[in-house]
Image (tube, rainbow, N blue to C red; front, top):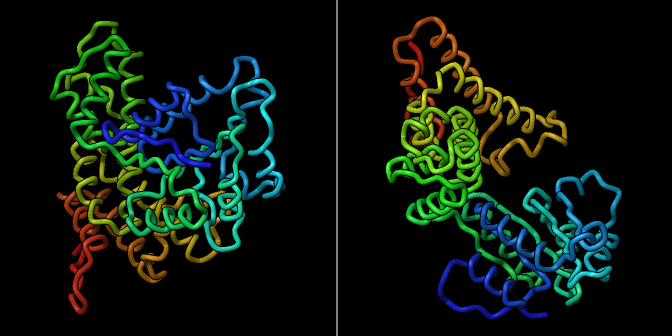
Length: 352
C-alpha cells in the first residue's frame, strides 16, 4: 500500500481533493488537525466518488471513536469491517471520527487498529479524523503513533488556516450562499469565531438564513448575530484557562468586548473547574471525561484547583455586590493562573 504522489502547490486538502477527483485513491486518510471544514470537504467528496447512491447502508460505515470505549465491538471485528468487500461501490468507505479521544498507549485498541490499517486492501478506504489540539507535544505524540504503525504517509495536515486564507474562505463561502461581505465584517467574523473553520461555516449558514439573497454582510449584521458565537468564545476561554495557556487572556478580553457579563464568564469557568476537580478526585463519570480538555489535569495540583475555585467564589461575590471593576478582577485571576509567576513570587490578592 502506498500513498498517492502529489504536487507541491496548493494546500494539503486541495491536493487530496484533486487526487480524488482524478480517480487516485488511498486506502487510508488521516485527517489531522483542527480545520473541520477541510476535513468534511474531503469526506463528502470521498462519499460522492466512492459510494454508489442507494448502497450507503452496505458500503458506507461511520463510527464515532468515543463510542468504542463503551462498545462490545472487538478490535478484530473492527479491523474486519475495514477489510470487508464493497457490495457494489468503487470501494467500501469506513469513517472513524475523533480518534484523538481514545487512549493511544501501548497495548491499546487504537494502537492495534492503526497497526492493522497499514494492510488495508485497495477495495476499502478508511478515514480517520484526529484533532490533537494546539499543544505541540500532543501533535508529536500522535504523529509518533502513526509513524510507528507505518501510517505516516497517509497523514493530511489540516492546520488552522492563517488569517488571509480564512478571509478567502469567508468570501467564497458567502458567495456560495449568494451573499457578499465587506472586508471589515469578514475580519470581525474571524475574530469572533477564533479562527475555527467550523464556527465560521456555522456563522455563514446563520447569516444566510437571516439575510436576503444578494445582501452584503456588514459589521452591524455580525454584531447583531454574535450571541451564539459568544458561547463558543466562552468555551474557548475555559479551555485555555484549564490548559493554563496564556492565550486565555486574549480570549477573555475578546468575549468581554462581545458583551459577555462577568457573572456569565464566572459561571462557565466555575463549571469547567468543577469538572476538572471531579477528574482530579476520580469522581467524574467516564461519559463526561471528554468535556475536560485532554491533558489539562497534568497542569494542576488538586490544591491549586481548590484555590482557583475559592478565588472564583470571592470574585463572584464581588461582581454581584457591586464591585466597580469585576472584569479587571477576571483579568487578574486569568493572568495569575495562566501566566505563572516565578518561584517565590507572592500572588496578588484578588479582592481586598
